[in-house]
Length: 201
Image (cartoon, rainbow, N blue to C red):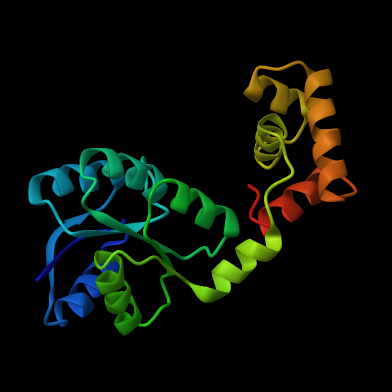
């Protein structure tokens, strides 16, 4: 039997996935969790073969949880499940040691097949997402330009962004100008939209 841990913050979806996977003759759900911290505790206790992790969880997200699992339970394979098929998420998930990256609307049979493949040492990535990641290319943004755009998506003024990042307003303007130029945008709002669409944020 393949021992599977399921971490998903939406109880109804978690229950549905557990039921569907439980119908497979060779898969056994040995633990469930609603967030990353819980998933790590359950994984250490129950030692699953495969951990299915939702990318968007409160507190520690799926990618951070995957990275920590790789340290504390390296024999456990990680499958990241997401509603958001963003190329940047795919890159970060693979860097964190995930063996598979699938969108949640994949059929249950595909998910079960992916679990079997990662246990056999294969990598599984949603084909459409893999194509999008390749076409998007690496982010041209520096870490500080990235941070400035993230802050710009939450803050209304340069002063707010500067306060959030603990930088001067002039420095923030320089980072935003560089990010606008690199994304080919006309202003910072458009730069945020382009960067999000291409998976750079």
